[in-house]
Image (cartoon, rainbow, N blue to C red; front, side, top):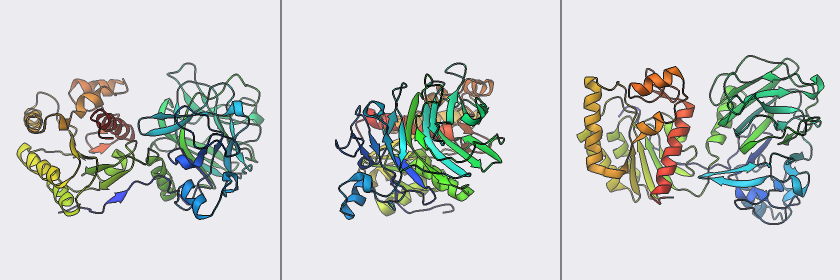
Length: 438
């Protein structure tokens, strides 16, 4: 069975990349406190957050575990550079959206500052999960004068990441050639006095730009621009980390895996897929999962599940199949269902042929046979993915041909795009929630 990798693993989001010097994780509820001094208990949905612990030094433990094992009663004595709101009125609000926890500033005066102050040095890196909801305002600062990375655009549909260096008095430079609005993993690296680079999701780094002046000794979240208090950040922060120096490619991959695991830890869903690395991608936003990576066919998936057994609330199966035989698929899915304790969900794979072709007619017949056998356990991905195209001419042409939009899925390469993984994961989450499985 070529490509079969067994090995059940747990998505465990507090595990930090050892390459982050500071790291903040909203999924680790024990790292959050209502009071700025660590009092007031853990916040819930809608509560203010006065203190967010830096979890980079906790060696894979949750904040609660670390404090218990080290007999710590004062959260501020946990090692690290903790984010503390400047005043009670400046505390952002903790919110929940499906499997996510995030901080949402009020868009007026909320600000959190690393305490003790952190000097990132002349060369630094950042990977974080953010959502911009409007243009204007600093997402985070690196200077104590509050200059840093902010959102800029002429309207809400034209929001870009830019570097605002107070020393340059308004030298705003694009860090992204695309729209930064919506949920994205941001990657930003400053190379000393030479340049600063940035990218969104898994897009390659873009052209180098003018860097910030050194020292970078004022890391802060949601900071107002130094002389433009009317431009606060409007959006959400889900978690992220900052590192001194430039992260190597393999280190950056580890950092991105951290952002992959920022969803709620309490969910228990088994992910089975033949998509290489796809279990990690598909479980982005779904929460804590057990996963079996990269069996080559549905039959291999069934064998893997039979070998291990899955005691979970739900088992989600996704095959990035180029060919689909309905009778073989039904046999494999029935085998998977028989070996699991949870409800079975089957996410239909992307079609690889346009509507009206002989290949597509056969494909559609197979899909109908699966629906006849499993009913609502078959999740129609096609209509959902088409509803999330980017509106471009290419995407519209794909939708007209009855395909997934290419901004979400690359048919020639048989490769899921980052945005496609996000949309598919959100579809899985909403289905699990609707069915009462999480």
